[in-house]
Length: 443
View 1 (cartoon, helix red, strand yellow):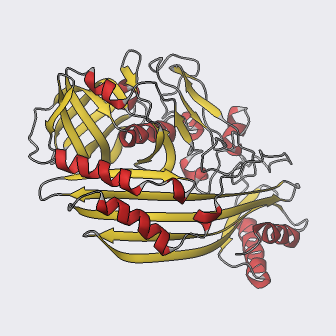
View 2 (view 1 turned 60 degrees about the vertical axis):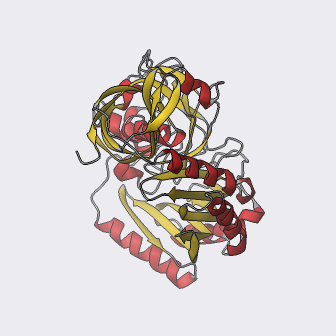
View 3 (view 1 turned 90 degrees about the vertical axis):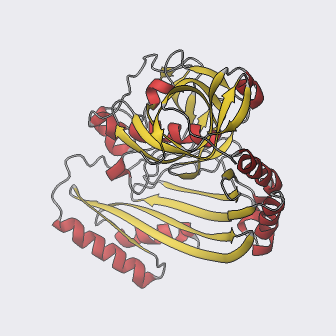
């Protein structure tokens, strides 16, 4: 693996005094073990190195990237990016470079995961498959490890590294499917048997599903469903670019949510997955978004912070100029109750394990439509009594989490998969007063 720091320093040296410049160098490995029909059918691995450069010449800004680290490739990157900058109009909103500042000395790294073999991933897969006791299983086990270095022409110089491991899969019967997901910084923490048991239980319960009438139902939402709601709030609401464009629901200081709801972003947390700085070289720190139902903050990169007269919160990423700065290390405060207690308190409602194919209809009100998937069950008199066919919902996520709407929060906080991918949200199961289901999966 290349030394990202050495490459970043080399690019800054090549720039010299010709421009303001910032360089991000990433290097790492990822590997995936896929299984279907209860058999491993593919092992793939990838080693990568990426060098990204952004320059500003008299306010004219341009970016470029290469996957080479030799001097010829780096010099071509520098020369080509400077040439493009000379052709660009002046960017009146260019915020300048990050000044030198230290980042937290936090590292989410596991040597075993960084060097994990196909056999070690296969052991997790085997445990998942065996837990199904004959059901048909499909999914994947993934390990990844990467190091990132940042340098700019003002002298800011930072580095970080992290590892991640995931098992995600389903068990299927002839008429049903159940899913389960685990993600964390280390392969050893994955419990393939527990994940497989959960997926198989949902598949077994999902047989003989029946239709129910559309309408508003009390719900118990599993961590995957809650995680999707949280990432939509982050992307479309707690995003300074959305605020600037008048597309956000955010009203800072207002009690917009139930007092039982607290959400923050924390890439530094123990057991997390993030590195302690962003792609502009801004150190990251925990950021409250919702505290006891009160809207507390929004995410900034340097550009949005300059426009709103604030400071970057360390949420720049390669696409933030287009999408805005987004929180991707979300934590939802867990409660004290077991999931079973949340279900026991429901007279009549629906348990939803996961959402699928969610699309925002109105970012301002956070009205989202999507489907339930791989684990939707009727709750009657405090018990899950039978499977419900997949349903379409159309629901404001802000309203669903609104004052008086969060009736319970479970103690099962974990990394949960979400609409935007794994490893972005730690979420618990939640009980909500109502969710608007508008029809079956076909409409």
